[in-house]
Length: 207
Image (tube, rainbow, N blue to C red):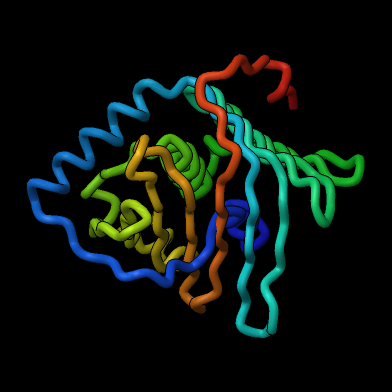
């Protein structure tokens, strides 16, 4: 399970800037903008840098690669540095391709894994403001917006203490994703060179 959490975590960088809570009116406006952006997003191709920070490491473990997303539920994480491997989510299937070996997981048979899959997809799309599943708080900074999510579901909270999504003020796309574990270890993914609604072949997600 922890290896799965580490895969999911491929997403963050801590923010050292001042954050101001949004008012109720600002929250509603922000959510409308983000949901509109998510509804108009059919594909995403983006480079990413992932930092895994652990208490026993003096320096964080850094990985790089490319994310490809295609609506409604296909995601491919292709890691290129320091090691090459791929993680593909498609429908209810998770496939890990590493050093010539393939591992498949049926997400539909595991409620917790299925929840993680939905969490990941909705995070990438920036469309996840479910008050029933999370305690949510909204903030504004000089670099855009940040939303903090704390899981309400007990099983998920054993693996995720909270996670944060950062959004661009310009186009309301997700710029960073940070996953914080109960131990305070975290994974932070920063997206860059993002391309929206470019052609993406289904063969990219072939398992």
